[in-house]
Image (cartoon, rainbow, N blue to C red):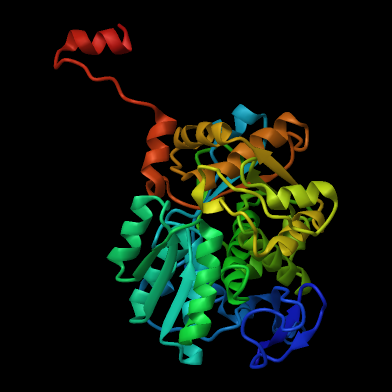
Length: 439
């Protein structure tokens, strides 16, 4: 079945055949939404839309606009399938009865961006592209480098020279051609597109390549399955996590429940747009009743990189650039390239945007760490946003909440050390130990 039937511009609504365009709308430069044959997919039934024995994002191959990339033993086939934790102490500290954390750090290169890169690399193989290029502050580049290395593709990464050294090291270990740009992410973004056009490379850039959102939407599919799988389990009864493949889709409950409230950090806007796309796909297939309908999506930005939040608060879709200076490098963007769809993700679902200080982001890192989740600053931003939402009364105690940690704290050890503080240095005596920890 030809499930991928074309593209639709998110701005003007123009439609294109799969082979008619590659990146953005030729008329107005708008981001393109991938269009699937939902009527045909719906006729297949829910049980045939999931590959039940696959624990990765490729579990949802029938709902993706690419074919099976093969190579079951490679990282390309191991992206996704991340756990959903229910930390009861964290929930109690916020006065919530149902709180989950979707932890993306177990991905092959330790971030959410593996989802997009695995699908983009699969697309590159389908169209015969030998070189894939992207701009990145680190995570997207690492994801592309790792996925490309897994199948023998060449990856070229443009990164701002200020990107964390641990992330740059990861790019180089995977064998990517890394070019550090004198400037910020936006300068790297523009240069990567120029290079792609000049050398005929396939460009992975988020907010530019429509297949990135298709990879990221798979997290929505996993949340849908995992929350439904949780069912009537009591929080704090020893059940702490649900894997993505824990629940057979043929047994999804049909009783109505309160819609989810999902918190995710936002930089260029592509992750939140991808999540929204995933839930819209499920809605088009009539599969959202098991989690109470369309979730409310809350985007969280640093006050030092808040272009999308500013547009949301102004009631507009006009994204005006800012001078981004946040320490959360993964979401530090002057001009978000997927801003319009990111605004809509919150507005169309009854969600909202929140802004938090960099100090609040740093405080959120050890807060998650104390329940066993090590988040980089961008990942901790989502939890900082939930804290603010609870304080402002946007979230009620009974509301079911999912917070997404988008990347491992090992991505930015400098910020982790700053958040945790320094450990005391003591003499090698029991007396010294007692002076620090007490009797």
